[in-house]
Length: 382
Image 1 (spheres, rainbow, N blue to C red):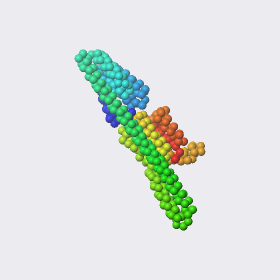
Image 2: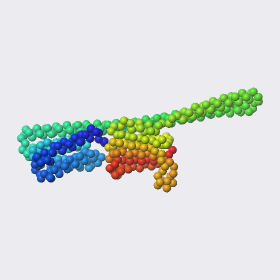
Image 3: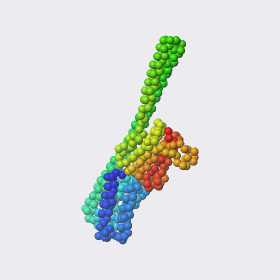
Image 4: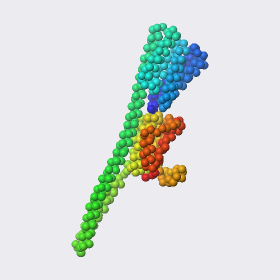
């Protein structure tokens, strides 16, 4: 799930708060129970672990391990700082980060464990009973409020993602339905043309046959009627062909309509003017772009996605294998997290099967898991 701008600013604010609450001990104004260099290393280790855990949502196992380490380190940092000061804010931070890594009940258990550690610290440093209870109550409430707020934000982000995926699916269905309607209309027109031509050609044949057996003015009458039928037939053919040559659906606009108004994802789609598609290829391209958009929304955590459909000659390796006809190539690249070992799911497998059925191929590249995700689909030009 991609982070919103609000989420990014919230994360940065959390980092600043975490640094500020530890400044008195980091700068030497408070002496921890541990040697200062070791305590500083613990504190910096907490910042690193909690930061990586919050940003590695695409690696859930690693993120949970880092969160567990951050929790244990935060307890050690708090229990080794006399008086604790504002350092228990670290407990609030771990509780907030846990919302994205564990179920809500897991965050609740973490709050309970954090409060137990806070109570142990109050006893260790000799807090008065009333002050200790007030401290526990304050941090219990602020942790609960933070967890509930974070859970609400995560739910909103999930709903926005589902809405974006539904938007893409609906636009794709609209495009394909429009193309199906055009195909049915062409079929209806072709049937009408067949019926009209069959009737008029029959009349024309009969008139010419009658003229062949007549002489003089009677033959001329049949020829005149045959001439009128021929002209009517020509007009019918021209009208019908004109309808059959109606402007085909705009592939560029069809693809762009699917990517329009997607939240938190800037999509650019370019279609080469030389690209020519039939109905089957257009369907494959529409479904391909739909799958790419959906996967990017679900997994990539990307800000930008570029899609291009071009007309190209085969690559050298393919030409050596005897393939020399032009190709239509669909390329997509995002700036998300990528995947060093991509394993195509049902969507990408279906996309590959669709293009292979047209004599093409599909390849994916996670670019080492560091620089986004790439999809390339090739099919012989139509």
